[in-house]
Image 1: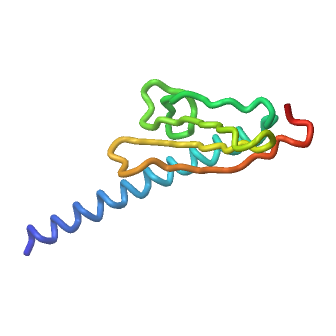
Image 2: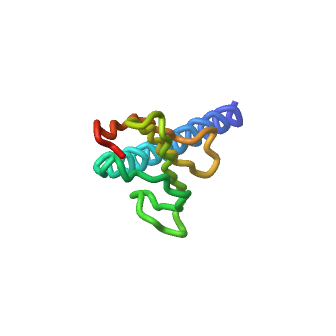
Length: 106
């Protein structure tokens, strides 16, 4: 019985750690998305993977990897995806938005 309880405690603790890490990854993705959305849509560019810390700042010792992918949907519309991965993640945190370039966008 004690071994079963210890196993349950370990499982719950791992789930709480995963949840906290995923929440941090989501906060990093939100911050990056807000930064991208504040830029002029006409000049948005994809950004390669960057290792970041828990605050989303570039840090070669960070636990997270962030990347920004910008795709042209049409002449006046861009799709922006912010993706954040972390160790032992089942899947990355992904945020997607569409950005209107404007009537005279190119």
